[in-house]
Length: 62
Image 1: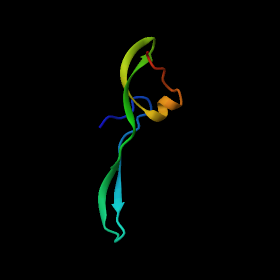
Image 2: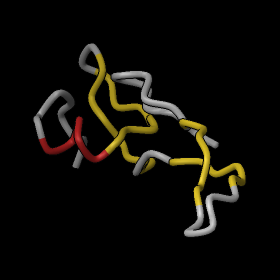
Image 3: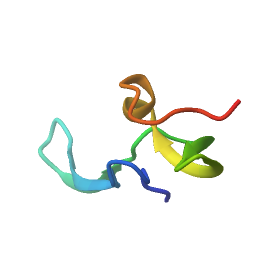
């Protein structure tokens, strides 16, 4: 699973707890998109989460 190249957001693990209190493993995956960004004046492809896109931490290459 890809992680965000900007903020290093990665997959989290935990337990899913049912109504009868049985516990099974589960994971939370970040909403990561592969987009073209401008890094030091040159365009490159990077995995960026949608929170970094929304908060304008990167500039998209169009």
